[in-house]
Image (cartoon, rainbow, N blue to C red; front, side, top):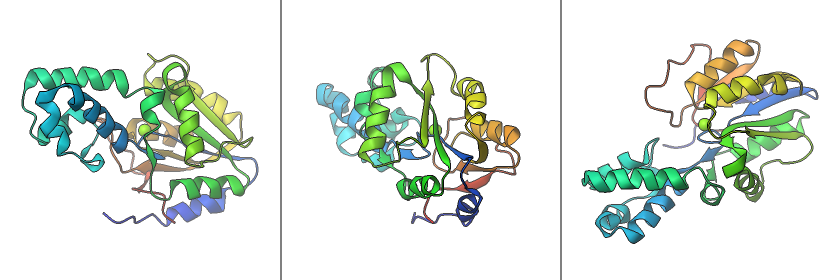
Length: 230
Ligand SMILES: [Mg+2]
């Protein structure tokens, strides 16, 4: 699908001024993890011959939220191998090494720069955790030239076992202490709803990329976009 953007992204930039805050989630919001999924599948196929043929048919675009679904669709039917892959994936996916493979969503780098250049504080509020993914996350943002200076704040989960929404809720007072929140960007409806309730005056954007299965219904006031193209 071609990048479409959303005219409301211009409204967000119009609301940005010094003293304001814009909150960005990372996974499936600013970053696309298809290449990370693909590399994990390729590494699995490299030592499990039974999975090699299915893996060879895959591209990064084939991966949605659940990586094993892509392998099944590519022809891997062996339940034992699929279980083994899921465990392998779980060990690799949430790591600094593999998250370096993520790529920016269309328009994301320019949009975050536009927010920062207008004087807002950029807050990256992610469900990634500091112990396993902190180093890789900072390197990933730097290698794609996302803003990472004195007007940015990166908030990672301090403890890996916290739930994502629990963590984001807990972090909100820290976010509010940084300034007036004028916009939030998030792909999980549950988190986007949390922001919409906490910041009713802000533009709260739901990224229409992927989200967890069985996600709660998105509130009607959320603005929807699939990318950051303006
Ligand atoms: Mg996300």
